[in-house]
Figure (cartoon, rainbow, N blue to C red):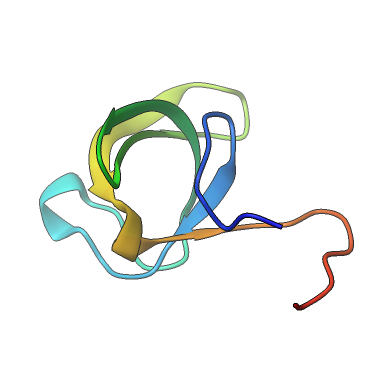
Length: 72
């Protein structure tokens, strides 16, 4: 299984990003790969309205899994 982040992956922040008013643990969706290990992530309200969209380094993201994934 690859741990590489892909477009449409659901991710969580691993650190606060105060300049964007985002805190550790907020959940977003990867919408584009901007460069090597940098992804544009969209953060939305429950009703689908976007409240933040910004480029975030891979080291500051964790991919969330909604089905069972076994450790290697």
